[in-house]
Length: 186
Image 1: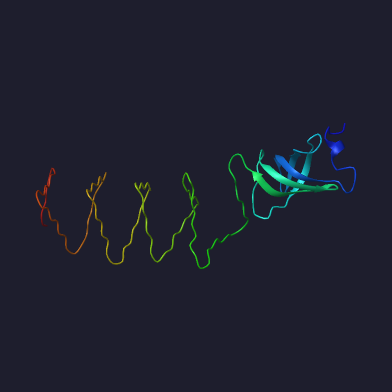
Image 2 (image 1 turned 120 degrees about the vertical axis):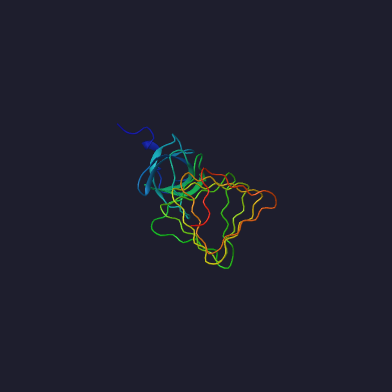
C-alpha cells in the first residue's frame, strides 16, 4: 500500500519543487523525517540536514525545507518549541578575537562538565548570593588572603586546626573563649 502522501512527493514535473515550512517528525543520523506543511497532502519525506549553522533538531521543530526531484534538504530553522540544542563533534574553541565574549541567559547560565577549568589573570565574581557545596575544597594563596565581611560565622563538625607563625585576635568589645577545657601553652 502506498503512503497517502506519496502521490505528491516527489513532484510530478521536474520543474516543480518545494520551498516552505516543515515539521520534524523523526530524527536520524544526518537525516530527518519531516512533514511538508504547505504541500498538498502534507507528505512526510526524508530530508538531509543542510543548515548553515550547527543545530540539532528535535521532533516538533519547524524547519525551512527545499525539495527538488527525489531530494529534500532542511536549510533553515524556523522555530524550536522546546529546547534548542547545538551539537558539535570533537573539541570546540569559541573565541572573541580582539573583543569580549559574553554568554547571557534571561533565566540563567549553566556550565556542566566532568572537569571545568577557569584560567584568568584576574577573576571577578559579582553575585547577590553565593552558594558553594563541595565534598572537599583546597585553596592555595601565594601572597595574601583577605576577607572583609559584615559578619562571619563558621560551623565545623570535627576538628578546626589553624597553624601559623603568629596569630592575632582583636576584639573591640568582648572576646569569649568557651569550651569544656581551654588549654594555653604546652
